[in-house]
Picture 1: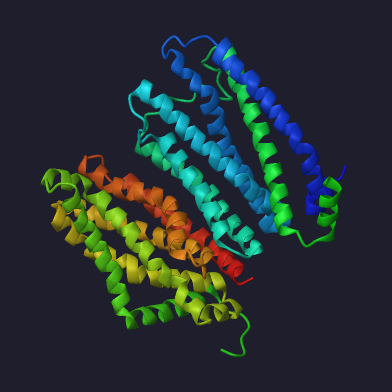
Picture 2: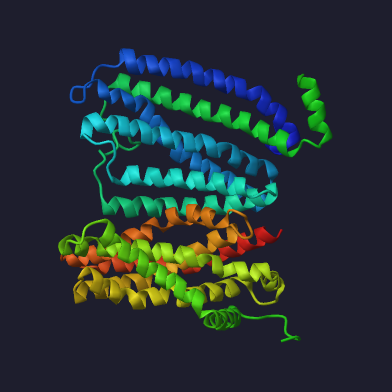
Length: 244
Length: 230
């Protein structure tokens, strides 16, 4: 199979239309299973009580917020280097989902922080860099929506996302050296996880659900962007007729 | 310079630097505005917080740095806007002088006309907030090392928002989050010195940041400028 075949909006539009309901269904199914494990099956935490259950949403959201920015920057680099229109559209389609996950991570973090640390917000390294990540997402979205010419919007957004991606580690470490209160990571690839197995499963299933959701939403959104940009083209008129 | 085809980056830098400095000298009023803005913002803090000398001394470095960030941001519009409006910038893009050199020279001139004056008036902040001589020295060195990064990163934002209606607000939204590390290490240097830890680490990181930004940002700015003209 030739993947380049799907690099053109005309071939990707129907593919995205076929794929997104599947990913949406996977997201819904895994989300239900994950939430069931998280809120019913998983045991109550010995130290934190029921409050800890927010991690089943908080941790996947935080993972996705960072991962989506990287994917977005990757698409931006492709778009700048090869001038492929679709990569830029994918980057624009991913940004709102990424911003949403960043906001959810901050929001659930605050909800967890109040009963556990006794404060909604602390100027801790990870929280502060997550907040700055939200600003980077919003800046990207604002810049793209302020530029009327879509090609300039794509390329200007791409430069900004790439500057941002270079800055994220610098921001992270600068804030980390400045102040740290957040608990260390409970899950890492190198060490054995420090949590009960059911909790871990619930979290991983929720992470997969978030992943499938992000794919479904970006495919749906990229279809809307394609319709907006290619509305004069013949193939799109035909495709829309066929869908009716 | 009609017959030659190749021009080195040094020539481009010195040409753009001399030109922009001359232009800046001829509009001294504009330069004064950014500097005055810096001093006014700094003076607002004691009025809004508390004139307690001990508190003021602890928050002084942060206030000086935040005000420097805002003053730089205010002056960024001048970097490309006039040249964009009268078409000079387009000629710069078409000229045989290497564009990264031109951009480097312009940014350097921008720093000399806005960043450097901030360093030079920072003793006034020390007087207002009761900073000691050693702390003032560290503050001045941190501003000297850090404000070039502000100009260089800001240039990328200014180029990306070139000619947009919402440019000033958008510029703040794009650039301020990227300034966070500079703010942390800049203000942190003075605090580290005051607490007896020594400011060497912070200042070294700022210097490293300036070198890194000097290597990387002119190219990003050039790309952004070319995108604006496509």
